[in-house]
Image (tube, rainbow, N blue to C red; front, side, top):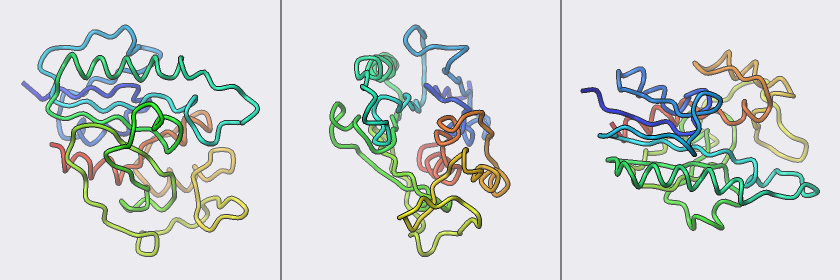
Length: 201
């Protein structure tokens, strides 16, 4: 039997793509087809990748808009319940640096995309039980992508759909398209995804 990987709230399936490419039995549990709050996991789950939406936890959330922490934590807790129920060999839950640390505590790992060869910044935190992938680059040594948007006052680029950075991103990497700014920024950098897979086969 192929090893089962659950990709919870996985969106495009970017994080689990290396597992799928390697022949693992990847189950993408994401809206609109599957809801982690009602999902019944199979037996013998080997690994879980969980990426609950960062909408209510993001540090870039407009300060004039009230956060709905209960709604955000409802999904986080649903992911946690699936992890507890299946007791996989490894599991990891990620979110961009933000408010979720107040509820889950200190993360077990954090990374920037450029540390795995993807030339932009987006600090991401990971909680879980997994082998930590070895970081390969610094900002000075990672390959750069011409044309990525750099916000005024900053020296390093982010990726932003509205600033057309996605054209360079998609052209330069084997990646996934997205229809909205939030969905585009949520795509897991493939350099990290591949390194995580190598560390957690």
